[in-house]
Image 1 (cartoon, rainbow, N blue to C red):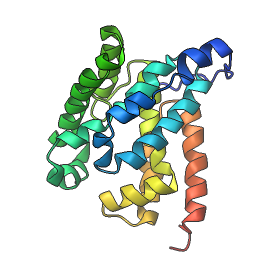
Image 2: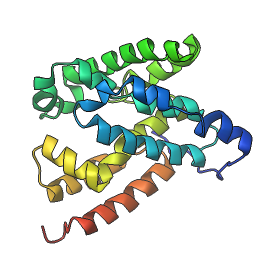
Image 3: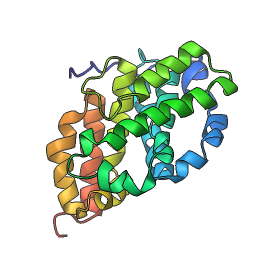
Length: 214
């Protein structure tokens, strides 16, 4: 996938009012139940924060689509067989596990349920569900918004919280998981800014977690 060119940050009042400062608290409240599965209440807020940072770097992206899509992207885990989330979703063939396709589909269902009631148009909902559907299983990103959601979804893994949770899901030590982040996940970052953020976060996390010793 092609790295996108980094642009200057656009902090104009109109842009911020229309996108980054749009109040999404009603949407967060609408999916509180779905946030309590598989660490979503840790994973999604951290990924959301990375998404907002990336939106400032790439002002050509529709920040509202990005923010809503990252907020909802993993809510579908709440509607799959919870006993299979770790065993199948984080097993040897985790990338193509059926339960991953299921959680994407259920996430789209949730988006279609909650967004119209909050005033979002059908066209907007389709743009969001097009990103959610395949965010883990589709090989390619098809838009800048898709790319920012994908990078944000990965970026949280490089934080200490992400390493703490995900290393347990994969049955690895923090040290071995950090090695996996370097070899497998860093090359998956699509944007130049996302890659820079990932490297910075990983170096910080490895230092805090004493990876060189432990």
